Length: 403
Ligand SMILES: Cc1cc2nc3c(=O)[nH]c(=O)nc-3n(C[C@H](O)[C@H](O)[C@H](O)COP(=O)(O)O)c2cc1C
Image (cartoon, protein in one colour):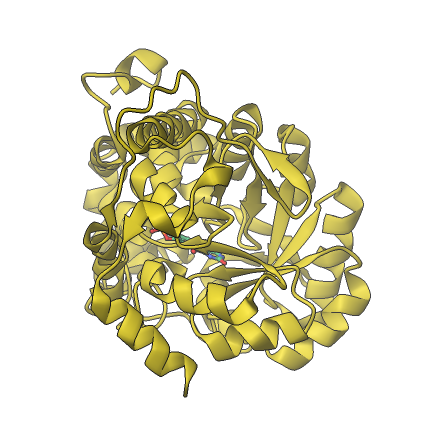
């Protein structure tokens, strides 16, 4: 598999699923499954994507549009399209370019990149790589001291918003990971790695790039006072003590002076609480089906949250987005913009920066084509009248809001 643009164009790569297929070939199974998998029975993982299929479009016919305006403003910043890059931890395992490559591609495409705390590259280097907006996503890994130091560094480096992920009281049970020996592979014991090594050796290209990059990266943005950067293998255990509560938002607000985005909201009650705590935006998210399994697909939860915040804060969403038409549907239901996780990470794994660029180009072309077929001149003009949702969604929303 080459990494140039040629191998990423049609006929080989037409949609995001094509990038996923290349990623699956290129990555050793433990790394691919870490990226691709979800929690427990993966009900929510599947439902996130499937629920988009229940929404029907209501196009306006006989309208000719030469060009549509895809731009949006999120937290006062102009983006070229309503697609932002979600925080994806361990990106450097997928490709040595990791977070730097993804941020660069986002900037070139005129959109924003959100850097995960669990990053193999220094947050300063990631910010320097992009000409677009960059946000920093915070986990309280390594305790409050490490978090405060991370926030201060992010502020100093020029990140324009802080994203607090609130759905990760502990790490979800992603059953593919223990089966693949993910923990053993990231650890230091050679003996413990042995049963899993054959699969790694079967991917010599990935292995060579990984070794040339220095092997398992340290987490340069989680510097535990007196101990230095956290090891990747220690993350799952550290998450147990890292649950973010509403009380934490108060001290975080004192350290971080910019806008705060609360990521991981699924209900009207939590949305209202986030607004009361001063969130400038909320992200309707179930972590891509990686945390609590059997929660609602995010596209189903979106209308309830939009109605609850009633314009007092911006609403973003993520989960299951694989096509531009999914993004258009989310905007019609009230999202200001959409975050993509796996859709760009498959591209990153397939071909580094060029793969992320290709993923963004596919989605952009999809959105533009969908708008033209809908007879809608711009993303800003999309509204509820362009879609039809199942009656059961409406009934459920009314029940939930009255609880
Ligand atoms: C491999 C992987 C790692 C992730 N790491 C983080 C993370 O470090 N912090 C976070 O807030 N969300 C993380 N997420 C969740 C994403 O930010 C996003 O909510 C999710 O991927 C959206 O679903 P999608 O992948 O179907 O687009 C991760 C998702 C994946 C797939």
